[in-house]
Every structure is written in structure tokens, then in C-alpha cells.
Image (cartoon, rainbow, N blue to C red; front, side, top):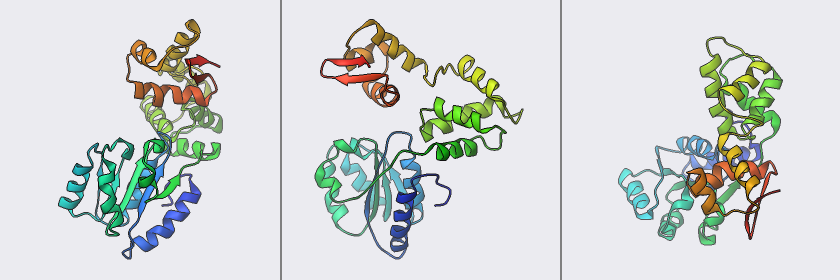
Length: 257
């Protein structure tokens, strides 16, 4: 798995596991990471090296069991596993020793302890700035930039690999024919085309504007005012603002720091 950048300790352990899996060893593995950290991508790389595989995203454990049995796939990736309502129905399959099951989640705290005890838990750590810059460089696919540009792309993407890849896709659309861009051109594009200012998109800035008018506000009210789901507010807006130290969540509600 040399093409996966970062998470070196997890990759080393997975290589040991893969050596056994290719000769018939079966495991339950839980990848736990923040949104955009590449857990689904890594999970797919792993299960694809074990056997013919399938990827499932289901809220009903019965549908997961039925799909695996009908496909007769030994190697399977169950993504967003925290969404599964009746997850205890998976326990007999997990205990059977007949399947290589990889699970991925960004909300491991919602999973039952009985489920987690059945898994090898692999928890992603933060990426280094050099690793993130390398992800940006690779994602630009040959467009020429200097390190200052890579660092700004990383900052504008909230130091998250998934966001970096998406931002680089947008930059390729703008500069692909030119084949390069300068730091000044990058900053101008971020602000005047992508509407990203100081590493914050329009939703993050609107969120902060709301809190500037109110001392405290609830998640329900923020969701209503912003016109997006509560999950979107938590995972795509608040995760950014909390990581930047701009907001706090208290018993009274959300507030500025």
C-alpha cells in the first residue's frame, strides 16, 4: 500500500494482517478517523487485496448480512458502520471466523462496546504538514507550484486530505491548461472564485456571523438558519471551526471562543 500517504503505523500493521489474510486468515477491523481522512479509500485498498470484495453502506444489518451471503464474498467493507441500527445482528458473522470484515466510521463513540471489542481498532492520527503537502502535490497531477502554494492549499482545506483532493480538483479546472500557478494567483482564485477566505468557506463564515449576533445558540437553530442538516453543521462546519479554535460547545449552546 505504498500509494497511501500517511498513517504509517496503521499501514505497517495492515501489511502484517494482509500477509495472513491472503493465506486464509480472517479478521474484523475497524478504521476510525475524522471525515475526509481517507478511511474508506484505505479500507477499499485492503479488502481488494484479500479476495473478491463488496462495499456496503446500509442502516439495516439484515440487508448487510443478506448481501454478503448472496454475493458469497469473503472480503467486505462496511462503510459508515455507526449508521447501522441493529448492529448486534452482525455479531455471529463477526464471530464465525469465515469473513474478512473491514468497518469504517467517523463516529466510533456511537458504536456499542460489544461491537468494538470484536474488532482490531485502528485509529487514524493527524497528518503531518509534509504528508498533506505531498497529497496536494499528487492531487494537482503535474501542475507546477512551489511549496508556499502547497501550504496554502493545505491551510484552505483545513488540513484534511479529502478536502485537499477536492480543492485540487477545482484548481485543475482553473489552471489545468496553463499548467502552473503562482501564490498570488492561488490566493486570488481562492477568494474571488471559490469564495474561501482565511481558510473558511461561506458556510463557516455565515456560522460565525450568526454567533457574533447571539451569545449562545442551539444546534437546531443553527441548522435552521443555515438551511442544512444538523449532521452537516457538525461534520462540515463545526469540525472546521472547533479545530481552528474559533467556537466552543457548552451546556448553554454554541458560542464564540
